[in-house]
Figure: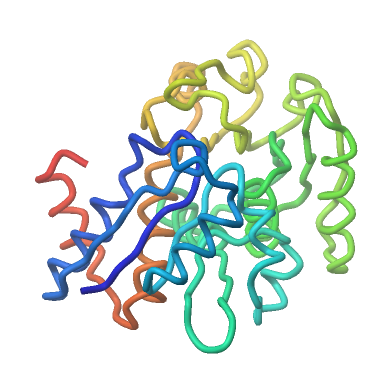
Length: 276
């Protein structure tokens, strides 16, 4: 039995259990994958994390709002992930937990599938939290011309912009607390806030502000068709759904958990057959 879990808030509709159980089925491995919600368990995040480790979990995924918090509890070997400052996959192996970020690698893959060799251009990135950081660094790897880091908390946007500049990138980096203004000159618009999630709702940007862009991505995948993506599609933009990031990062996480790769086509077919 491969014992796995997901720690986060508002994850009762998460598809992660189905994805990893499907990977296990394809590999002939029995997988147990639990949703671990600190508020429902009546425990702090740190206590839930420690309990998962002591209860024999092979590893856990970590999602909103704990991706930055968990970095203080793990060893991160990859300098790129240390620079991101957020972790979404943890292995309980060896003397201390090991932290990884498959949002970073997953976004690169999801973008290339949708846009092939076309570069991101100038990107308005809304949301400077854990997933926003991973996507921002992925945009550097994809060769973005410019990134405007946007967050209602201007200090968070400035901090992310500073971390990106510290890499020595040639990409132009700025920050803002005004998404509508930042989107006006953007080729790509990205939502990395929780707005649009089931039980949260809303959208990070009104449709009227999307007219100049050519593509959009929403990190939210429950529901898969958010208001943000509906508006982007109605404005004629190429859209990349949060499900594609979920799928790609899940494949990378499974490889870390199990030490085996899963066939993307077979996994997609199996999940679609199960209605996921």
